[in-house]
Length: 118
Image (cartoon, rainbow, N blue to C red; front, side, top):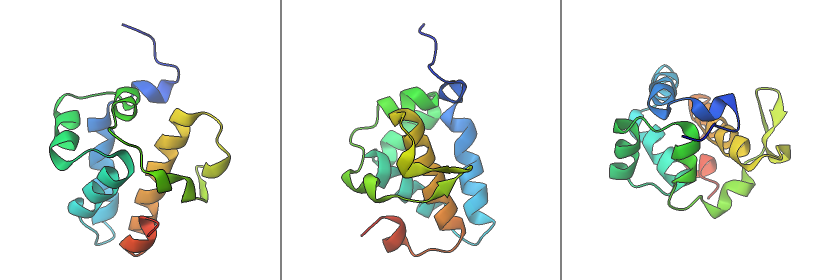
């Protein structure tokens, strides 16, 4: 088994996912919206997303196995955890932060069209 590049790479997606859902639901948003955002960003369909959760894939495996990272992800801008997402040089960490940023936008009440950069 290879050693993850970052500590965050070893985090199990199935452990983070409920936190995303809780954050959204605490602001009157839905699990379906969280799933839609994750699928939009990563290219997983609903069954693929559920499979990743069931298999308890770590974040590195989750993002490495994503079918198609959305081409508009480069339009995601802003600060998350004190870092500008567009300036993060490591592609893996940038993808993790993109997802964090989108879930933050959902929890802040932003319209889905804007979250999905449409």
